[in-house]
Each structure stands twice: as structure tokens, then as C-alpha cells.
Amino acid sequence: MLRPPALRPGARIALVAPSSPVHPPERVDAALARIAALGFRPELSPHAREAHGHLAGRDEARAADLNAAFADPDLGAIWCLRGGAGALRLLPLLDFAALTEHPKPFIGYSDATALHAAIQRHAGLVSFHGPIVVECREGDEEHALFELIMGRDRRALSLAGERSRCVHGGSASGPLVGGNLTVLVRLLGTPFEPSFDGAILALEDVSEAPYRVDNMLTQLRLSGRLQRVAGIVAGSFGTAPESLRPQFSYEEIVSERCGDLGIPVMTGARFGHEGAQFTLPMGAEVEMNADAGSLCLPAPAVIVNE
Image (cartoon, rainbow, N blue to C red; front, side, top):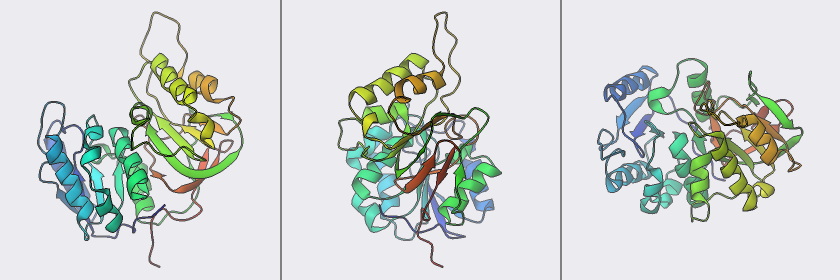
């Protein structure tokens, strides 16, 4: 897998809106100011303030913004303003060859899962499942993102937290794939589905009832995808909506659907829509330790010029 060059201090960062629009619009101005305060040069893509129904502009406009950023040889990184919905519609319109020719870190999560998978499949490039611009928290979350994409942190990333639990112990290594479970399932059978073979599968979601998470994990299992991965790291799934009917917890669902696969599995890892959003290098080779609740990068996720 190709690694992008490390983000340099003072570099230009393109802010794109491949999914839903930002509300209220003032959050965009606050994001621009924050990135500038960090010493970078934020550049808002031409159509990033548009809205078209639940989308941040028409498909052609959003794709044009991404393609322009992919093709810009002097751009330091591409960062999604927010998630939402709509990135799937862009996949046939994107020029992944341009990103291969001019590699750079691409950052986002949630609906950006579709873009991460497509970038892995068609550009062969490591990308970063990390906080969106308008929600990036100052402190540990922001620090972890920039340490990773600037190539300054090569240590094991502890994903263990208060709610983390080892479902099946052991260690495994492989390329990191996945992201938002709902979006990932929608990619199955398409030309943009990532390879599950020998991978470490990271999964998270939000606002999905436990039975729906159970159904999606079961679909991955019935299709044989879960049987092909080397390990599973489940992050946050939000808070289960109240129901008058009995229901499993998210942890119980992961345990029931994944715990008998004979591979290391952990739940409650610190990434996803709730709590600290630790950045994951999608497509990079990682070493997972379910007992310790950690991922280790044998090599930097970006190319660092010493």
C-alpha cells in the first residue's frame, strides 16, 4: 500500500464537503480559523458551502472539488468538513489515478468510509479515519491526528478505554480496513468494496438499533467476509435507543457474531462517533493486540523525510 508524504508545517490543507452540508455555516469559519491557528493554510473548496437537499451541493460539484484536490501536486492534505450522507454517490465520478500520482493524506470518518474504501481499492493509498474538521477536539484528539499524519508518532496506539473489552484474545497483523459499519455494508458487491483478506477490520456506528447492527454483522458473516479477516476492532456504537422489547447490548452483539471466529476481537475501542476519536491509518499494516487493546504501526503511516 502506498503511503502519502507526511504533512509539513505550514502546508495547504483543502477542506471538502463530500457528504452533507455544515450547519450552522458559521462552523466552517471557525474551522478555517482553527486550522490557521495551528500554522497551516486552510483552503475551502469552491462548492463546500453549498447545499442541495441533504447533500453539500450536487454530485458533480462535490466530485469536482475532490478531483481538484486529488490532482493538486502542492496540496498537503485533504480534510472532510463533516460526514452525513452522499459520499457513495461520488465514487464513480472520482479520479483516483490523480490521487495516486499526487498522494497526500485524506482525513475523515463516518460517511467518508466510502471514500477510504475506494481510495484503498483504486489508489492503493493509506488514508486516515479521523475526526472531521468541524468536530475535531483540541487536546489529545487533535494531537493524535497531527502526530500521525506528520509522521511524528510511531508508537503503539492504545485503543483501550473504560468500555473496552477483549472478546477473544490474541494478536494479529494485517492491513487496516473498515470504518462505519452501515456504509461498509453498502459497499459490498460494488467495485469499491475493500479487500477483507487477512485484514484487521475496524468497525463503528451510531444511531443504529442493536438489531440492525446484529443484521449487518450477520450479513458480513453470511457473505464470508468476517471469516476472511485476521482480527476485529470494534469502536463506539453510540447509546442503544430505548425499546420496550428485550435487546442485546452492542458488546453482546459483537461477541455473539464475532467471538467464535477464532481471531482476536475487542470492543469499546476509542474511535467512532462518541468519545475520543483516535485516528486510524486505513490501509496501513498494523499489529493488533486484543488483550492489551492496542494497535501498533511497524512503520510510519506516512513517508517521512529524515
